[in-house]
Image 1: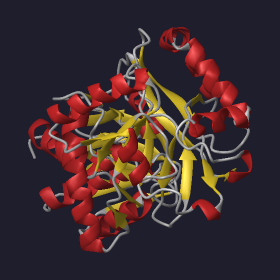
Image 2: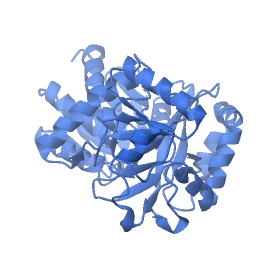
Image 3: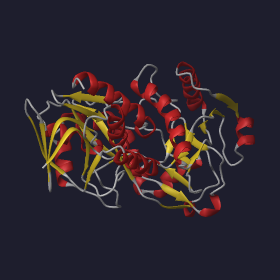
Image 4: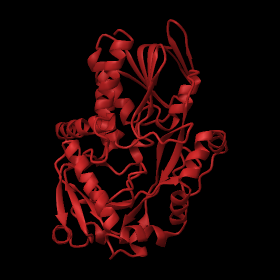
Length: 400
């Protein structure tokens, strides 16, 4: 039995950032962090592209827009303080046709609304800046950077433990029971009795909420993001991150070229419906995961609304030349043999029962708990502001 004043479930970057800030804000209280994995950042945090986003895409006034912009600055300062790899290389959003150019102009306006510095480039400007990239125009966002979010999470965890926080790793949550006095978290090896609970469960956010009998109007639908890595001779093919202009009706940013802090360049991700929440291998299927999706009305509604796009994503996942074609729109010199295997990631996407994709961060609560129900990209960039937001909520709700 472990007794704790505050407990956080989930050792991704959001959970660890929250746990650390709880120890800093409330040093007189005991804080416990619980995760089923032996090490932190094993899921979404450890399988992303490492981009520190500037906040280009997000609706002005939304939590995403606010948290992302503040989080980018906090992340930069954290990396410098702890000597974590960080490179402010900038991002180019490249338009390859007239429709994308019009969407690009709309993105430029959104940058202005979100007070993000951006520069519009002509076709000639783009060619001068990136000789291997083609397009009819581009937006240059200089503040975008790259880092290693796994290293950041590990660093935050060390700081948490130095602040007298207790980390219970390798402790999968089996059940959660809440009564008027406490929350009882049962794991395979330990029982944690906590006064209050904050859940940052990522891919398992809805299942953890259901353990507490919360009436959910959403479910987590996993989308698999598949990547390739360019052959080593292309490590210097670009000096910026290269992004396509995204479809504003979709929450995904399209297949892009990403410089990594280790000097390599990745291609991706796409967005394929996942048949397993933690399916990072080549062939992945979970009967439980698929059954839960099939029983949820929102799954069929989002599938119907995005049938054409989903089918294209599925085909290009199976057919490598189709995947390559997306990249060749703006980087025509790449060939099939240049795309080498690279680990996939899974995005936890909250979907409402009416089929609506939840674009912003989504929170829920009970008498003694706060739940992060939806924290998609840019959650890694936004982790520190999300943690601060949860600390503020906890202080008021739990009267700490």
